[in-house]
Image 1 (spheres, rainbow, N blue to C red):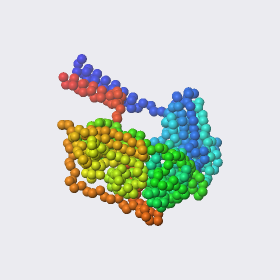
Image 2: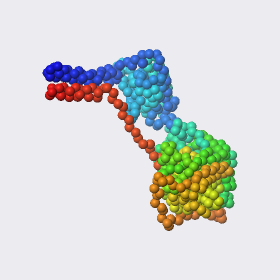
Image 3: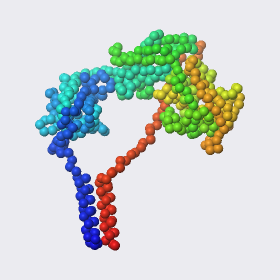
Image 4: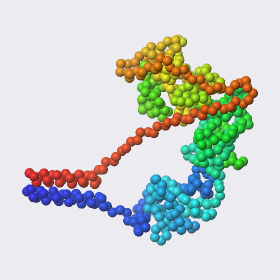
Length: 557
């Protein structure tokens, strides 16, 4: 082939490739009417196999249901497939009013509909993108009456009805991730959080009622966000000792608080308590929300027998205990950074997992007297040792690490060596107790490199569990031993003054804030994936460039 013919052939191939690019880039879009609404019939809608169901979030709007937003009564359309066109009719509303009714949906970050609006002939139509689509419906300007909506998609039809009323509808509810209607369970001496939704209610009374127990907390929604989160420490509610019958209001008040600082716990009323030095007894309790004498919501709290559901030990790098959170320790256990092991070497982290809801009541009681990053370690020492006994009523939790003969890990001095880390994960009923093996203080012997087995024992009431770990010599390839702490560690600060058992007055509650749950739940690492282009536009463009280069090269030969 001559050079000229080669050049011509190459140009012909380029033209063919460019035509392919144009065909890909300018493929005809769905036909649209002048008003911007697609008038192309979806072939799936022409068949009779589409199923469709419709319902509004509230049968009456505005609603006392705290899960229904004040500005919208969301419509849910459920079908057996996505991406279908539906027409909407209502005897009470014309198509332009329907368009205004649903228009707010298009302003959301992730609208459930497209090709939306009034079409020729006064028909309102929209393309629904999801099988389960929740579409905002704004009835703010609708007059008081009942409205019926008819939905038609292919051969499928359905209706939904809601009544618009003009009133101030008060409501309340105990909430969980599914909305209203939550119930609650915790182990004896556990801590339980009650998320409360309020609608047109600023001040509400939350009552806990059961055998020999009747406690009411008055809460105020201080920032008008229609939410108050009330926390109950069942280790303290209704407790009367050890202050000689003068402590019933004191302990109960310490056992109740609200999470949001903008909200307030206005008052606590104790009509009846179980008395003595006892936590809230095992059993089922009625929860009630009232406002101005009207009952707005009910639920139940179940207190179960205390238990140690699980107890184990994990071993990993020392830096696992550098500013850990519950989330970071869960991840380390899941990915094997903290691995179950029966042997630990010097310079490693040894982390015990105590799974029991019942440890959190005593721990939260002690932690309310402390602040700072080590507050849980100090509170844990108060809970499991004999120091500051009056700060934590009841002898519930025990924990020790003992070795051969009289050898044992001295938890207090290990803490002073910055070797003790305690991290609560109340949401998962797990308490992490970690020790840095290079900073252990051992009484009556030495654990490091001894090869001896030390056994950790945990007790919750009369339930016990143990876990044995050998303190082996460090291997040659072990991680570098972290820098030793200062030879003069700071003394552990003393807790605030406890109420005097001799006074006849009711002691005042502690001023320190109750501890929060794990304050830093880290977000998972984000990952990005890219779909390969296949042999689409990018492939054709690459082919054009290759053929052009080939043609030029041949011409120069």
